[in-house]
Every structure is written in C-alpha cells, then in structure tokens.
Image (cartoon, rainbow, N blue to C red):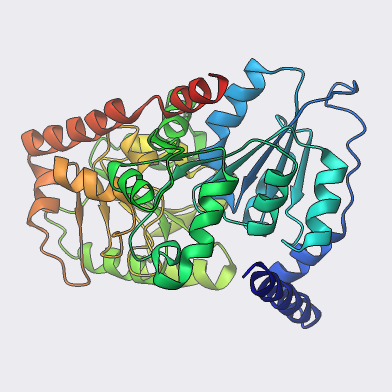
Length: 414
C-alpha cells in the first residue's frame, strides 16, 4: 500500500509541475518553494542549537491553530530551533517572515527521497502536525528515526477513508506513527479507540486560545473609526465573503426597517473583478484603501476591506458578524467573531465545523439559506434582550473551550 500511496503522490507532484508550466500561479509558487534550500546553520540569534521542533500546517488557517502551541513551546524551550512548513502558498506567502520561526518553508513533496533529505537537513527532535495533515512517508520516516510526532486539534468522522474497509493501512499508520493524537471532541476519541488507536485524548481546539489572544491584543483601526464617524447604530461585519454571501447581504439589506445602517465587508478574495462586483451590489460603498487617504469621515454606508490581515480585529466593531463560505466549500472562521462576544450568522455548509453546531445549540448564532427566515436575525438587531443572550452564549462557548494549548503541552512534557 505504501508503494501505491507513493506512486499517487508522485503523479500528484508531477501534475503540479505541469500546471506550473502553463502559468498557474499557486503551482508556480509551490514548485519554486520546493527548490529552495534553507541550510539551518544558526538560529535567530546566530547561535547553533541542537534541538529542533518542526511544525507543519496545511495553510494559514491551520497555522493560526498551531501558533498558540508553537509560541508556548518556544517559550518553554528557548534554545530549540523552530522550523515551520506549509503545503499551501496561501499560508507560506502570508507567514514567510514569521519572527518566531528560524525558517519558514514549503513542505517538500511526500516522496521518500525528499522526506529523507528534509529530515537529514533539519534533524527535528519533535514534530507537530495540525488537524488534517497526514503525509504517510513523513510519518513513517519519523517513526523509523524515533522522532516523537504529535497531531493536535484533530477531528475524525466515520466517513473518512481511515475507517473504510479498504482503509486499514491508513488506520495502522495513525496507530503506529503518531506518538499521541489530540482530538477536539468525544466522538473523534471514541472513533479512534474503536479502531485500536489508544494513544489519543481530548484537548479541544487550539483556535479558541488563538482567537482569544487576538481579541485581547486588538487595537482600534483608524480607517474604520473614520468610516463609522459619529455613527452609533447597528453594524454588520461580513468576513471572508464570496459572491453568494454578498448577494444575500444585498437582498437582506432591502429590509431597511431593521437591517443595520453600516456594513463592513471583508471579501475572501480581493482581486479587482471581485471588488468591482461588490461595489455594483452596494453603490454607497467605499474601499478601505481609498478611505485611508482621506481626512474626512465617509458618507458611504458600506466599507469594503481591500487588504489582507486585519479582519480578526474588525469584528470588535460588529453588532452581528456574518461569516462567509457557507454557500461554497464551507464556512470560514467563526471564532474570531465569537471571541468578542458577537453573534454570528453563516450559510448552510457548516456541518464539518463543530464550533458552528455548538454556537447554534447555545443560541449565539444562526444558519441562513438563500431564502432565509430572518426572524431571529431581526431580533438580534432590534431586541436588546435577545441580543444580550446571544452575546453571552458566545462568551460562554469561549470560556469553556480555552486551555487546549496547556493540555497539549502538559501531556507532551509528562
């Protein structure tokens, strides 16, 4: 089975190289990243270090889950080098200068020669993988070298290939290769144990720790403050939106008797065509980059965020937060808004997200369809008692899920 897996990875890698030749930007970035050799001669302060902790995340979202563990581990082990790898350019390009790492790299393809070369170069003494990262040649080689490896913030479901009749080889890799698996919930724990994987425990989701850190450290945004001016009414912050989300918001805005008077939209993609489509839906809008260069408050009622990296601190200005992605592959991070105690609204594709189910159950959020029943949403904007109960539910969810980082590190150290 390992041979078949390796052949599959070889063809996948070849496919990326081929599409890179035809100008695919993400593929080109990956291929270029694979060619980059970063010799670990010294740490951030120039000194040689013997220990090395390797953290791997698929993309930016998973990296944000890793950050609390990475930074706490580094604080406890200040003499340890840290190398971070990404699979996706969307993670690497944003965090390639991350100051807490001695190196940030693309993960070389999961082929035996690339795996051995990477491990020979960095000599990690411990490896951490986040949520859904299963690279079986890396896992096998780490086991052969007796390097402890951990998976955290993981979620498992019965329909995954590990638990299919033909997936026994993959299940054995989980059992034999990971030193310990930290899962988010009881269902994942029982599923692993029912398949003979005993080195697992519940630690929750480290994203709660991360978004809590962000909310505590968030500072005011001068441009948004100027946009709001003296406005003291209701505000909706719509984060990581896609066209179906923006079209729904435009339709909901027709209910002027209750919909908020100000909207802040932070689209998931900020290329010019997408920004123009949002402006067509909201003629009374202004872009963040334009308002930034103005000295006077804006008369427009919709602010379009046309940059990356500030969304998490914008939720502080929300009355209610709309989280995009629910009409596509899945909702984006709702916890960034929940950390501020902001009720959340999102589309129907949220089944794979435990926190979405939890917040609906507690009454801190709601799911909307293309033709939604907006009675609860209307109450969030018009009924102070309903709003306060929803906000308290969000804060309750945060309180009961903080501490995942400490659980993970205490278990590892013990």
